[in-house]
Length: 110
Image (cartoon, rainbow, N blue to C red; front, side):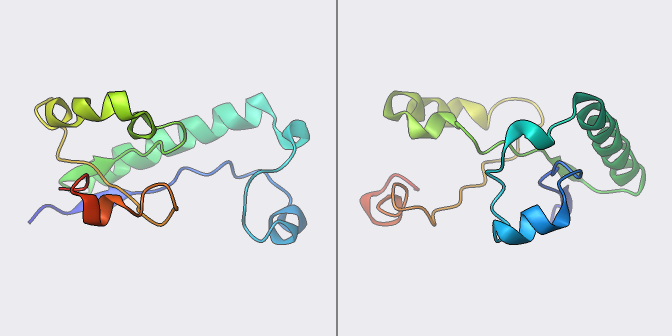
């Protein structure tokens, strides 16, 4: 068994009332973005991943799910080679969106 550490790495500087108003959906105006705070977030998450490694986690999962190449049918052929790359244990797929649901029955997710 491999025990991994995962986080979505959120931007931590949105006003809480804005998050609640959007019901947790983070498509909010760029007016809240501050690049110095984003740089602070980046360093915070790198430090957290280093600590997770020091604590003995077997794997760290870094996730970027926006604009993922699986949305392009021509790129799906890359999946076989991804798992042969050093350190790549596999893929995490979420199939809750309408576009991805057929993958459970059409063989794509296999």
